[in-house]
Amino acid sequence: MNGTRPVIVVGSGPTGLLLAGDLAAAGVSVTLVEKRPHRISNLSRAFAVHARTLEQLDARGLADELEAVGQPLERLGLFGRLTVDLGALPSRFNHLLVVPQYEVEKVLERRAVKAGVEFRYETEVTGLAQRAGGGADPDDGVSVEVRGPDGETATLRAAYVVGADGMRSTVREAIGLPFPGRSVIRSVVLADVTLAEPPETLLTVNAVGDAFAFLAPFGDGYHRVIGWHRGRNVPDSEPLDLDEIKEITRLALGRDFGMRDARWMSRFHSDERQAPAYRVGRVFLAGDAAHVHTPAGGQGMNTGLQDAANLSWKLAAVLHGHAGPELLDTYQAERHPVGRSVLRSSGGLVRLAMAKRPWTLALRAGITTVLDHVGPARRRAAGQVTGIGYRYPAPRGAHRLTGTRVPDVALAGSGRLYEALRGGRFVLITPEPPQESTPEATDRLAVERWASGRRTAVLVRPDGHVAWAADGADPAETEAAVAAHVG
Image: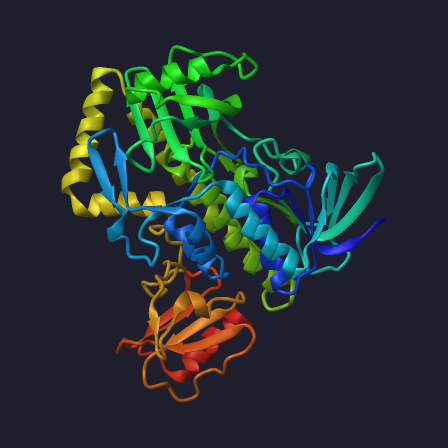
């Protein structure tokens, strides 16, 4: 048997790179297996990095680097009538960052390499078997059959495996999980083109009649165009030329902006699917291996990155003996409902954008009116799309803040929370002045004080959600909470 390690991550897209990098940075030996050659392609579909994802990247010291190469968008247009002002988001990143997926992958790969991740490119998973279901027995584990670049086969062994290997996940199939759902949009066309007449707005998107089109800049002189025509329902293998893309764009946007010099074109279909479970024994699914949905709202890559941020610290805590294996059950409890919600919201946006029948047009007009005039509804919609509005389930009787996402609050001494979270630590925020017998900082816990006069003690998890909170907690209660959650 060749090789033994705590974790094998399958798939080197954004989800797999973030997860592997987190584990390695936490001192966990991790191998990343990828069947493709070592090449970050610029043929990516994702262009939007939302506020919650930027917060997670900020907790890893990566957000500012992406901000430097991306372009912020403070307003989103929906249905030609509604504008969502992201400048009102309660986040340091009160905008959508327009940046190609390959730029995200570059910074994540560089971090993973620096942290010591072992990369095995041109290595395909051909089978997987596990013993036991995730207990503490050291003989429990997962055997992964792989085929290398020269066709040689090997067996890798790990305590845990994470499948981040996309919609056609070999890992998901190997553990026998179905991927129920359906194709929602067929014959979506993609192309990278130069434009003789650049659009007036950073993101250009509209739907008219049977046609939909979207334009976004790469930053290198090319634009990505995504288009769809309801009447052009053909297989993905059907030949595609630039004239078809131009026609769809003219129908949806009124003109084709002088498209030319296509360096790449493709046709694909968009599915809505979700695995019924994100974990089977010692094998986990994350990103597109666990859920896929329409590109509306730009939530796909973001949801996968947030899956990884949720799972990585839990795996590290269990592997280092700071938490019991039951902590890993919370990954399903917390992330599966979020995936389901994204599936519904992205699908709803597509259906409303392409509304044609009178009752669907009336529904869209009603929703637009509500969002345009009712502040709470608009804020809730923005929170869902950007990811900052999600909270995780809390135990019965827990403080009202438990499970909520914590914004980048100011800390005493000119610090801020997401800087304190760097290094995969918990952060205990206590009132000013400090309580007697406040727990001491360790390599797993940062102890900070509110810059304001707030009296609530809050223990923030490494992923920026509240693990425990109390109003006017006494030192013994605080110490007990830290011991229970941090270990």
